[in-house]
Length: 205
Image 1: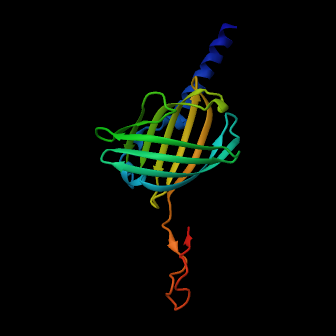
Image 2 (image 1 turned 30 degrees about the vertical axis):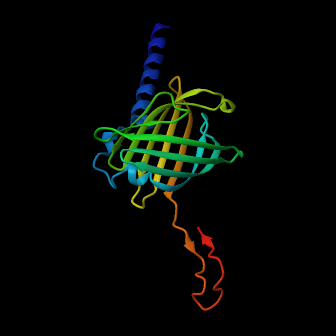
Image 3 (image 1 turned 180 degrees about the horizontal axis):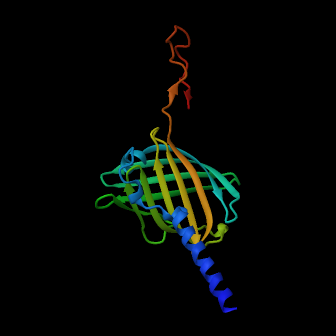
């Protein structure tokens, strides 16, 4: 019986080590040092950004999806990122991050639903941000530990993956894309062809 108990504990330990070494949490900013293009919070989280993403529950099944419009603004080493979410279940939510550049490649992030400060590191084409978030009451009001990674691609799009845990157990995962909003283009320039000189321009996305 003792042997079986020791064997079972050994197997559990190996599983824990394997999960730790081969999982999302095994990533380190140093893994991406020297990768490009270089991620710049002031450049890549600036202006209007369009996002869409999926949220997965603890069983790995998709539980919700969203589209979002974000506005990044910077003044020196301080910036804000305002997020306007619309979820597939009809819920809408607005959040606002306050970002402050620190020494080296570090930065801090705060928001109304964050406990204390989130701490971030920029490394090559990536950003890692860790923080504790308090869910809304209609989502249970739980406090979760979040590890948030952003990966900048050559096209300027950002791939975002977040893992949320409670008591060390994964309870949710988010995968999203973030892209700079396309510039508005006039569908028709009034009078350009001798017609409709008084027509109002119509914006296209």
